[in-house]
Image 1 (cartoon, rainbow, N blue to C red):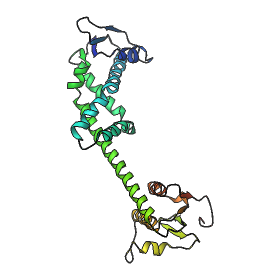
Image 2: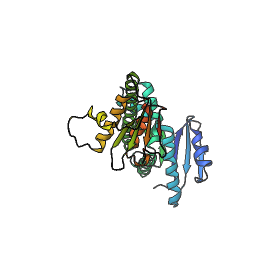
Image 3: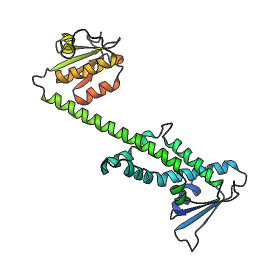
Length: 276
């Protein structure tokens, strides 16, 4: 590794002030110069000598700077080249959701930063002067490959969310068109698995409700019970729903969906006769 490292940044004096001079953990013996012949480039030079920790901190700051300045730009290009089926609005939503995967061990911020750090070290083994724009354009293939995987994950997440919202809207529609809706239904969550449905008077109507969706004797899995419950409630379309034995719920997403579909008309019971 060289005794002197020089970075060339195109018109970005903020990097110097925000990252290198004002960041308490990154106080380096650096020099800053802007040659008259190259008005658009600012050069930052570091002499790490034998202080490996200083060099590590410096390279980490470079990696953070590259992510802060270039990552969204690179992601926009990746979305434009690989996901042209998405609208401009959809792509904007995808970009806004980057932080949702910030802690992902493979695609999160630290994983992306480490990829950049390794590429910076590889470059500095060959050359002591780095023009950052050129480095990002030509020497960050591993980082760009990781960003493509990140984009794919974000798009998949966005499309799954959109499909879920469309599903919720469809269920709300089906509930709204049902006629002769009962005033109340009680859903008892069974500790051993499954559900019991009672009408407003407390009469067990589970069997006739389930019979509309089942043929003969069927051994239901837990997942099948969940699908059956949402189907029954959509068809029954009660004005209000009370859920009993909340502590036995195994599928939180199912009940989150029920709450969304019957917006404002579902409640959990604290403790009552049915709960027992």
